[in-house]
Length: 438
Image (cartoon, rainbow, N blue to C red; front, side, top):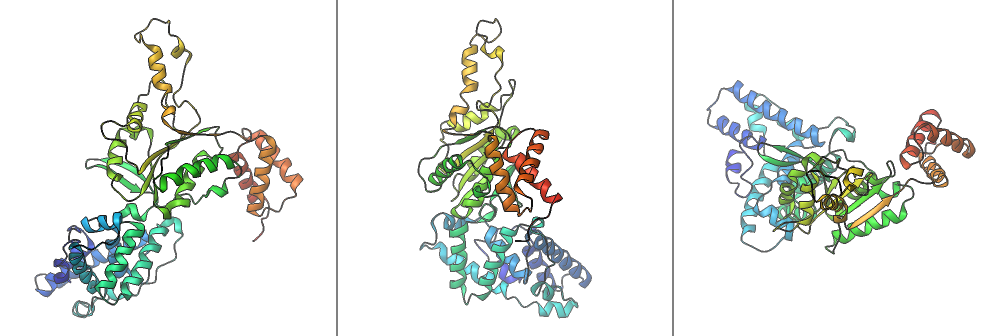
């Protein structure tokens, strides 16, 4: 193994702490008799445990060794994988080096562990290569990533030569991209000593736009703007505003489920992180994806100044906002920034002699969102329609008149009519009354 790994060029930057590099070093010590047997066994077991931990996180199964190697290929961002992500397979001298690396990976795919297992009296690699995973609920691992890793792993294992191996890997890069951005739908950001990093959100909401009852014109407007963005036409930053519980956030979250396969990704960011917006955009501007930066429940109090970071990003400085990034925000306020009567007192004597300019600066933020979509609370008839539709989807066996009477009582006790109130009512009824099995 150590000889194969040492031949890697484009994929040689795996890091000394990677499982593959550590196992390679252990196998080198075994061949050279440079380490006591018990130390070797302990070191191998440590890396097997690390591989099992990774397999649990990503739902690997069948052949964990091949799953792991496939995961390395899918997530390693190097000059070859990144350019292939952007333009697909092209003729070039770099392909020669890539095929050499893929020849190494193909040999690792079919590595014979039996000599070291016999010598050390272990069987861990045999078990890893014939693994049967314990069933896990999909909330406990990243199902989307797991399926892609296992599918590609099977195909790579069946590849007859490095040419076929090369075609399979480059096709994956072209279709899904490389790295965690290629594998995952949504991210949050984290600031640390090494700067800003994207953290995958594994268990995203499965909601689709069709799940939101009503609001057809709003959904159509959101679809139109997003689809224009995905195909490279002009599109606007979008502000979804209106009453609480009307489906604004669900509409935005549904977009990554609708358009993930078309290259859409989402980065969720909070108000206190606006200072990192420029760094986030710099990270993704050259990637072959379309990114929606999602800001949920956006609003500012009078003394908050974070809105200036947001305005700066939207308006752009010397460097314009890249074409593959849009900002989508939801808010219960159309004007985003709380306006007080004091803001309107131009004649009051205070430190700000140009209060009208200050007020205009605050109120102009929402104007930076070229697409503004209003979500209003439904009237009582629309609320009934939502309740009936959700009850039908749930398979709730309750007479219509009883259902609507109970819904009326529920909304009176729980803050009025909204899509959220209707869903909460159906959840309550489903726990209290039988539902159909279909």
